[in-house]
Image (cartoon, rainbow, N blue to C red; front, side):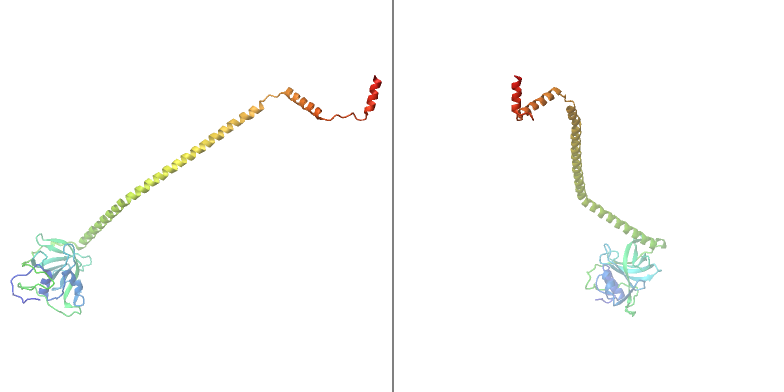
Length: 306
C-alpha cells in the first residue's frame, strides 16, 4: 500500500488517514472516526499523549468522518504539537498546537489553534490516543517526525487526494491559551441554553396544537353554562308563577267567607217554611179518634145537646 519514501516531493495532504498511516506505520482501516473502535485488540489506547501517538477526533459537525493527527511534541499536561493533513483543506501542517480543555484533563475535548488568527478554534470532541504499541504493550512502530517529504500511495478505502502544500504551523504566545474549565462550563451552559430553547419551542408547538381543543372545550363549557342559566331562570319563573297563584288564592279566600257571613237572615221566611212543613205533615197523617171516647158516646152527647 505504501510506496518507498523519496519517490515524490510533495504530500497528498487532502487525506488525514493516509498521512497518519504513512508516517506512523499504524495500519487501521476505515475513516478517521472509525479508528478508535477498529484499534481495539490490536493497538493500545489511552488518554495521555505520547510522541507518535495518534489523536482520534470524533465525527462532529462538518467533520462528519472524524480526523486523526500524530503527536509531535508534548509541551505540558494541557498542550501538544501535532502533525496532520487536511485540517486546513489540502495542506499538511507540522507542529500545530492543540490544547486540552476537558474538565478531567483526559483529552476528550480539545481546541486546535487557528493558524491565520493565532487564536483557539472551536471545541472538538475526541476519543483519545492510539499508541504505537500493541494492546499488550509491545511496540509495533516508532514515530520520527519527517525531515523530508516522502511520497505514499492512497489507501484502497480512501479517495484520491490532490497535491497539497507542506508547511510548519506558526508559533503563538502563551497568553492565547484558553481556560479549560471555563471553556467547558461555557460549552455546557451553551448546550443547556440550546436545550431549554428547544424545549420551549416544543412546548409552544404543543400549546398551539392543543389550543383549538381548549377553545372547543371552553365554548362547550360556555354553552352548558348558558343552558344551565336558562333552566335556572325557567325554574325561577315557575316558582314565581306558583307563588303568585298561591297569593291570589290566599287573597280570595277571606272574601268568600265574608260573603257567607254577611248573608241576611229572614225569620218570616223560616216561620212560613216551618208552617208549610207542619201542614203537609197533618195532611199526610191518618185520622184518629180521641182515645177513651167511643163514637156512640159522642153521638149521644151530641143528641143531648140538641
